[in-house]
Length: 136
Length: 157
Figure 1 (tube, rainbow over the protein chains, first blue to last red):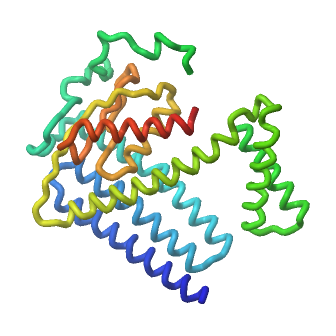
Figure 2: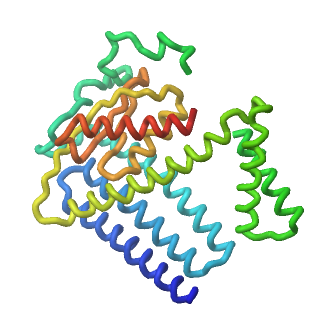
Figure 3: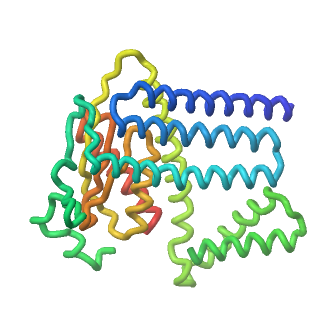
């Protein structure tokens, strides 16, 4: 009974994980601009890899394997968003053009390449954080 | 962090005293330690609020896992269907979070949710620029980010 359940869980995790990574790959080919491709690779890729590693942990059902699987998932989850952020930011400021269907771009013109500062667009307003420092 | 360290110490003590080194016993020790800390927290300022913090953390984790599953399914469906209707855009969302740690955690959590990608924080740390794939309903999008931020701050403060 337990073995059967273990097999079922492993299969489901592998299929869903593999499917998500396949979708990530399809997204990289199909989506129209770099930022949207980053969406496909970081999210679906991260979850797909995490589910695959989880399947390994379920299959072996040993403390040593499970601990390593947990560490791998932790590091994937910690590093993937940072890499996506770095690549996305660099591409935007390097001038990669967005898809023509992009509905809105709040970031345009906010970056000063000389001083490396990024404006918030709220400079004129009083910062609510400064008014009530005792509130937190 | 300090109350959590106490919780772990109590759990390890439980495992040592019962001489049964299994994951289940360690979890049981954690639960016992949590209950013990919940009882004494009113007398120890260092533990203040820990009993309320743990259920908040668990609720946040469940909420976040649900969000990830929901939006992964949405993006996956949108990627594979023949005709898509994305409305991507870069949105500046005003930040409640103020410290480096809070902003880092929030930005990473936003990036991990499919459909949104944190691009950058303004130099004065008041606006987070997010690239999103669905901007059709702008108010709903901002409300979603604000909801996530509220929950993150509820756990981190």
